[in-house]
Length: 378
Image (cartoon, rainbow, N blue to C red; front, side, top):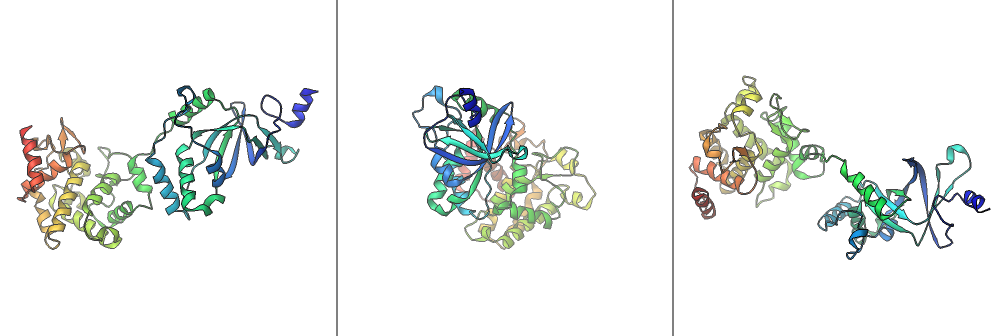
């Protein structure tokens, strides 16, 4: 009798069916590794109400995933609020600790995987993937409560428990490969600087067809000289300004193109690569100016020159032809290089810019003099 009752109820968990108040969700049922799981489109309001984060005093043996990073939550929330008409949120993965009951919408074979999942109010939800998204949704709804009826995909596993949830977290996070900064910059159509950079690439002859947009670095034999991410960082430095130019796409692109035109005319062999007389590999083998550290420092210098005199900055910057850009130049050590390797860390960009200013005959500020003195004493 008991067996027949269980089969008729289609209960997919051990124990008697619950008589407690239920939460019901329309779901699709699937199977992985012989276990049922469910996909549902849940209202953001449901997520904010039901998917709670673990308490700060949760015992260590009950913690199922990494600690929250509070700094991530406001960023995601602001993204949702700012782009509430054009945002994307990937699904959340949740384990249910408690009995569940799945009811197909009909007895026909083709509909057996569509139905309603009943979850007792007493059941606990464990967030396996998406805890920052859940917290951000809750924060975003405080500013835009009208978003509560919008939906997000939620994958439910019904064999929850600390041990199983910990293993799921490890499986989910142990294998994905993060995209590199180059791909992020290439695909980003929202942020200002990637947009300016893409347009600059099309208009500056030195960059056209010479930018690596996907791989994290330029292969030695490829015709690419600059990475997308390095250009975005350099253009960000170039357009740091007290005026509103950085908010004006047209003027910003114009400044970036002018910057690259000066470099094309005054950096070793770059003009020859543009005209086809030399190959990109010759520059990569012999010089360093195509690397991020040099580009950032050149852009900082150009920004400073623009701030001092917007009418003469290009003439001043053209003096970079006086610099020995050879990779073997010992002056790069401790500035653009550490231990013979190019580095954008620490004080390297500032010390590299100092070197440019010295070679161009420009005055150092008191702060730059102090940094230079410290560098020489080392």
